[in-house]
Length: 362
Image (tube, rainbow, N blue to C red; front, side):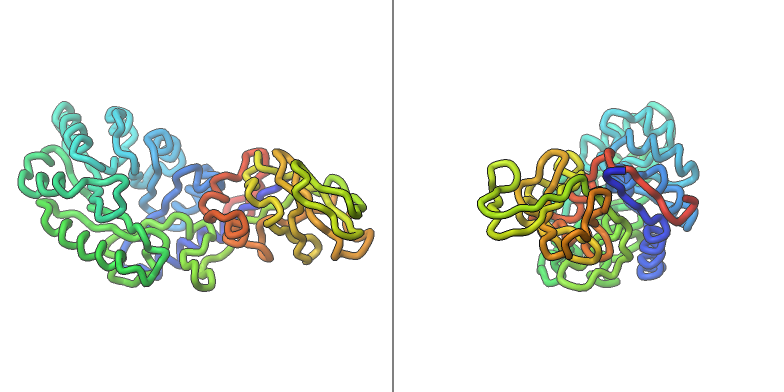
C-alpha cells in the first residue's frame, strides 16, 4: 500500500474516558462530524457508544442519518439545525440545534403540525458571531415563551471563540454572558459551553455537558503545553525512488530547491491530493528509520521528495516507508510546519490512504 493511515480506536476511547472522568458529573458527549474528523465514523462512533458515550454531535442532517444507523440508541444533535429537513430529522429521532429565530419558528411549526413536543438544543451566540441566536432574538424568546410552543429544549449551548488561549479575557466574558442569557430564558434545560480546549479552562466551563471533538482524535487542546491526549493516528508513505543528487541540480516544480552539495533524495507516494498540504513544500519533515528528514521542493499532487542525505548510504531504498504523522512527528507538529491547525490536517487526509484500524473491535 502506497499510503497507509492507521487509526487507534483504543486511543480514541481512552481520550474520551479521560475527559469523561475529568468533567464528571457533567456529561461528556462526542463530536463525530466530518466523518469523525476524517478517521471513519462507521468505526469510531460504535466504539465510543460501547464505552458509554450517550450523546453525539454532527454537522448536518445527512451525517445524522448515517450516524443513526451506527448508534441506534444514542442522542444525536445536528449543529446546522433542521435546515428544511424537519421530516427526516423527526423520523430518525435527530435533535436539531436551533441557531436562529427562523429555525425556532420552523421547528415549532413542524411540531404543531405533528401535534407533538419535539426536542431541540438552543444555541446562543455569546461572541463567536457565526451561528447562534443573536441578542435581540434571545430577548424575544425570553419575553415571549409562546415562541417555544411545541419545542422541548434539552440543552442551551454556546461556543467559545478563544478557548485555545487560556489567558484570553474573552473566555471569562463568554462564560458570564452565557450564564446570564441562559438564566433569562423561560426553559429548564441543561447547559453546554465547552468543546475540546474549553474543557481545560476549568470546572466552571463544564456546566452540564461538554462537547469534545478534536481532543478525542489526539489533537492538542492546549497549544502552549504538552499534549494530554493519547496519539490516535499514524500516516506513512512508501518510498518509490531514491536519487543521488548534487549541485547544480534542482528538485520539483519551479526548481524551488537547489541542491548545494552531494546527497540523496527519496521520493514518497504522498501529495496534496492526499491532504499532505502544498504549504509543506521546503518546510515539512518526515521520519525515516528514526531520523528526521526534511521535505525538499514543492509538494506535487501525488509525490513528495525528502532529503535523506543524513542517513547512511544504502540505508534507504524503494519500498521503505516515511512516517508523516506518528509518535515522532505528531499531527500538531505537521500542522505547524504547514502553517495551519491539526483540524485541517485530519479532515484533509484523502481516502486514497488505506485505513487500518487497530484496537476496539478491529
